[in-house]
Image 1: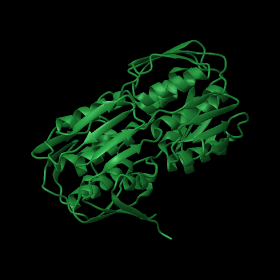
Image 2 (image 1 turned 90 degrees about the horizontal axis):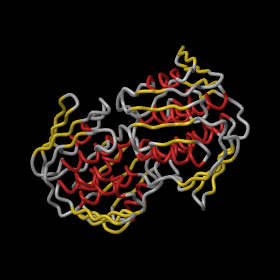
Image 3 (image 1 turned 45 degrees about the horizontal axis):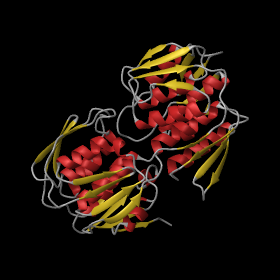
Length: 420
């Protein structure tokens, strides 16, 4: 499994290029199942999650071919050999459940294991299944499996009790081949939803309203393969922005869409960090003086839950007391016990964490409990006095492409020790 070792105290300086968005590429890979042909996805991040999704698609009969030099992936979906997504993959990658909508729409049947994913709280697929059922699917759950079938889905009006990203994506993909018009009210509006809708439209779908709370899908008879370049990863970009602020360095984060970073940028400025925006880049300069602030995670365009752990590290070194309120995932504060091991002064009260800033963090042996918690531990190591060892780094590999190499390129004293 290995570990990441960080010797703290080095200000980060230079420029770093953000990879394609993990949370955009996985639903787009699922959407390729809607067309009987070869689609091409570019700007691909080479991540453990992408590899897992490729293996899942291969099990369905999709031929996955990497074009490494072009950072593209060819997905040949001409002939599907299976309509079953086994637990082996779904337990490791929650996004695997996104094949349900495309397979049901194209093949009229899907059998898929109930999912797993990061241990950050309950993320039930009830909204996915309610949406498919509203379009006429017969859904049955038995022994940890979901089976759904429909001769052809019917367009309808669907209201989501919560603006779930995954449910919005699954319903969108199912609705593009449904008969008639489907509207999704209280839909998720994340940039990754817009990216998926753009890919579907290039395939011949008729999707409008992406990025708003009401998405309208006019069903078509068939779709064709398409080529698409995914958007940059806004969470990776935010992680590097916080890293620059934490170390008192100056970093230019490239391949970023600044408007996607509005909530993160606003909070960095609130704590006293200088942030300068360019058309496709953001420059962050820390000054070593951080002020406390309060954060409340919300669906986009609110402050992203996936940036909450990174900001907890930042606020642990801010002057004063900060309050972090987590409204999306009820178990997202589990990593704070690891941060306490490094000297942070904080306490958790339900879905709220109270963080009192300390003068310094101390290097320690910690573990990555989930993907974003792992990134937070790396950031804590960058700012800490002494050496930090982060274990369970397979979580980090799921969502960050060469995090160690990119940070080393900015001047961090960081390396990876893989087990033999």
